[in-house]
Image 1 (tube, helix red, strand yellow):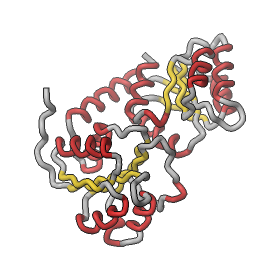
Image 2 (cartoon, one colour):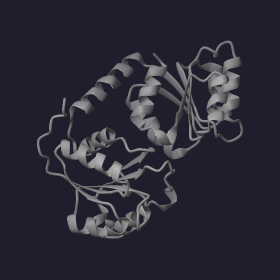
Image 3 (cartoon, one colour):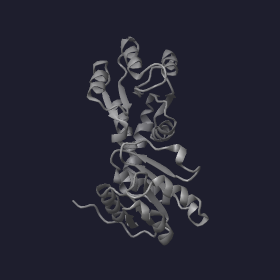
Image 4 (spheres, one colour):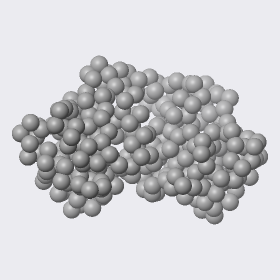
Length: 270
């Protein structure tokens, strides 16, 4: 059954994205929700398109043909007429976002995934403009269900950007979250608390995630706690090692959206 077309909306959205497959998915999803969209596939044309169209929102990929998304963002912010236009910054090549090249306050949303989740982008656009749709309502219902359960999650992650963004996402969905920035903080927390689930990065300062996982599974008070690895390590040998040590799930950060991570955590604590 085809998705119904939403009533037309007044907002104009400019998409600057050189990956044709990702760009077409975003355009189709946003138009289905009633938004007016324009697509620019060449980075060199990005800044001119912002000037010419004065959109209500720019969706900008950092990796572009013919120009750098960071340069477009910096030049946009230097122009008073354009600086207040909100930006969603995408990284769809599995690359981390270079925060040193982003002007303060210039980006409203960061979307880091190997493939942009068009439905997630639409939900965030709707939130930005105060609109709602059926998918957003379903997500809110799922968040309310998670809130009723009140599950405790220990997350071990030293990346500040990912830590900030995903912490807000998990807590807004009803989880009680303790974020540890290294193995020592995690083990200190585990001395006085038994979480419903542990989400664990592998590349950490000092003690590695593998060491933490091994210690958890050797502890008789903790070995029943389900553990999900959330890491940028994607080698099969790392995945197999984590599973041998007792991890129930292994998720590669760059290959999933925030909503997919929340869904996996929710499934882990059932």
